[in-house]
Image 1 (cartoon, rainbow, N blue to C red):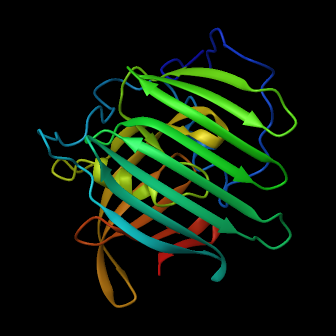
Image 2 (cartoon, rainbow, N blue to C red):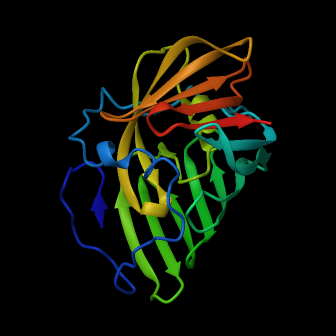
Length: 262
């Protein structure tokens, strides 16, 4: 078991086998933000965005959306992602499917389904990827605990529990960019300012933290959008949102990566 609230400290780990090394689906611009976000230090409760805008009965901070994103590396198309965010009974479901071919690397195919509560906190997450090897994982979230079961071709199943201490955990997985739109809905736009969230990058099975901050009006292609800056100590992403908080563009200047809605 790993506690996300105690940097660098690892407790007992429940395993069905030795943890395999996942190399089947590398992130296009690194492992999202983990290099700087992992165990970055204790986060006081006052600094954590512990809850999004409250959702009353039948209400939700989320909004339905369905579209296709184009993935650009140094201005050249290298892949696409199709996604859909929709209500499902008393929950919400976000599905994404990415196919990508980066020059000099294996083709990447990854699919994921995220089930959410109306307040944006995760209930469950499943992903499968096909690259050098096929791998998949199922994650259940309950009372601030993430229970992960990983299966990878050629390795024994592996189970790991991560304690976050709060139900509100942001999921930002490798090469599934529609999940930044979910973060934009969870962010408290009435309060604005920097807001720090617990983070999980499922394909890396490691917890961290991430900060989002409203970045004012951003211009692109002759139009104006609301900016959301998502960052850690050494990496920054700019998210462009329309008036409905839909993801229209995402830029990672340090990696020359852009994600644009088709």
